Length: 366
Image (cartoon, rainbow, N blue to C red; front, side):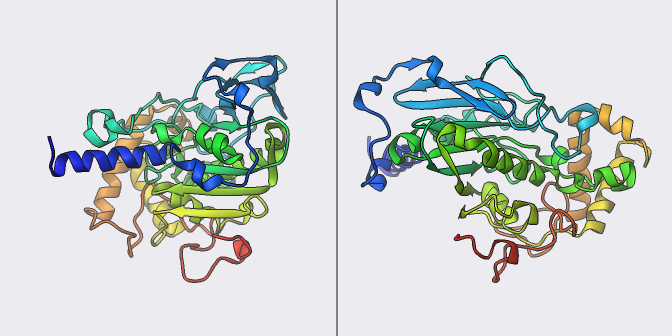
């Protein structure tokens, strides 16, 4: 069988192979092999050598085809209950070796069942599982010793959905194996849990609530600075990159003063930005969400107790009322309130997606 359909499928499979790193060796010429051929047996094991000691406690990963893999490593505490919309808190320390063999929870979100759609089925989409204890990251490295460049990946999903492992191509083993780098990916707060201005409800403690999704990203980068050397990475050579919504996260981070010194290179793979709403626009949005939920303007406890889904639904309804229907694809010239960063003057005080690089990251190659 030939024709456009077959050609399209072949092209899709080729792109998947590239995204999964199957064509990456040509890029990495000149680097020393990250692992001996003897260690590339295709087996998976959890030896004592696959233990890294983070500042919070030891973690045990596994070794597969010469790559050390650690999944679901905590970089922050559970964000549920009383921690909702507050800046990420450090994880509780542990003394016994903690298994980090499987991915952690994704931020609660609407599941799209993309595995039932042809092109995302071919890309091996997975929705994973959701929960508010989602401040976890993943590390792939050829060795726990040495000083390799570090690449930190931010997933897409337009600040509303997605995860660090939604696609098979997000697995960092190929990058670590073929390019002798330490690969990191993260999960963080999204949608209503990452972007709701509660300063009028909870006071100064909630100054970052409208952009807490982005401060989670900074917390993860700070974890990289403090711990990645124990995974064979160089904390002074950290590149951030992301696609679609992940690209927008990258450009936003480049304008955040708290990211200064944590980022040494950046790549934006689509995404970017648009006009950001002001603090007053986002506060008005939050007031209307509370009214939609019949929650009093000072009832912080109710917000901490309510299930995620009613919050999300109320936010979507109010955003549609304010923004109207979405237009054509591309950055919006008119600020849209809802699940995206806000130019609040505190966490984010500059729109970094512009013709002039922000002062805070002017020395960062993009």
